Image 1 (spheres, one colour):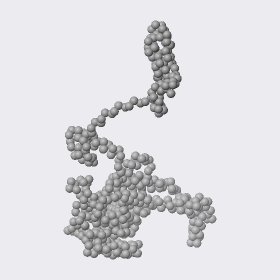
Image 2 (cartoon, rainbow, N blue to C red; image 1 turned 60 degrees about the vertical axis):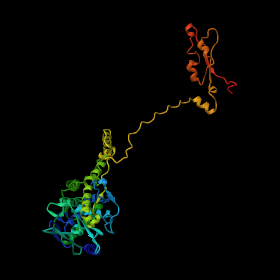
Image 3 (cartoon, one colour; image 1 turned 90 degrees about the horizontal axis):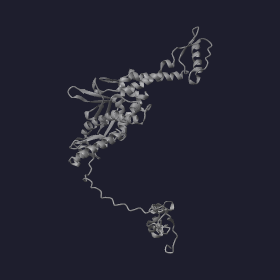
Image 4 (cartoon, rainbow, N blue to C red; image 1 turned 45 degrees about the horizontal axis):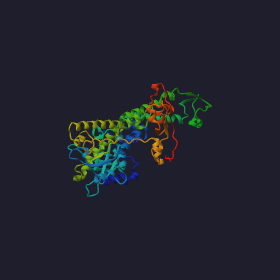
Length: 498
């Protein structure tokens, strides 16, 4: 029967613009009309293309839901998600990745999510080949064309799809999957946020139309032309035509009006008095309130910084995208997978978490878990089991690290002269450039005589014993009232040095 439905959907595409045969399903009436006067599912869907704020909300939520990746898992005996095994090849996974040959999963999810956000319902129709029980295709269909068939004993008997040309096609329970936001007044249908804001949608649309008409009609409030006598039809048509020609449109704004008869009377109301800017802002707030959407979620970044933007992104994922994904996940696991029989036993679909990671929170949690693991191991708990208990990954335990061997003493650093001498191939003696010279006589003390001829590598070393180049620091002549007469001089090269 699903193939018959698909024929009604696509083979009769030429009749898609025809108005479907009206029918009633409990709380939802499907007929003509627009917005506030029309509470039908069709009217709710049409509102998306008529009100910019509603379009932005539905488009953003549908796109965010469709972009999330999905995987198929085999459940673990432990019941923990981290113990599941991924299944990369299965008919159910193939069907979900390519619901039909005309749309990939992303487009399928986006379309059904638009239906859900606008009407509170999303419908998947299952297609099978003759004689084959396994689902081969899935199609998202318009909620206004689907009607549940209640049953007194079993709650629900089936469904009826009404094609664009009015043909009604019965569908079995295993041919349809319905996602819905529960309706407190009707257990068979969903509840749309659009129904709660229909007057606001009308207000926003009328405000936009008023503003448009304001500029098309000379960019001035309307007025009245008073004439002293009754005009004939010809005179009336001529006056109206001439007035429109001279003053209608933005290009003719503020032109001087010349009236051969009659006078112009301004209306007292003005654009400022109507406060349409504030009115449209209040309408946008009402629409966002119905969907629980923040300003930043639809691109209004006034008074926002990086920190609040990241917080808003995480909030949107947690409060808007995840609930929608959970509803789809329930439909996949509890309604689609059972259609594959025993081959799907123990399997479950799951989505990749769309919530962006919080680096600060993750770092804090990692530190706390590491400290907890260290404390448990210190008092004797098994290291491998401890990591699992505190939520850390399984890391091979190699035991306590051994103390590092003592570092070898550092080799003495050669002086600059020694380094240079080594590079030049000279020995240490040849590098001695300064020499102590003692003044030898009967008054020369023993320390000065002993140090006579002492050589030094450089001027700094020589001046350390002979400040300013003279006067040996160990001289004892001062004890006898004699000043030291020793000095250091630059050493001349000798034949042996050469």
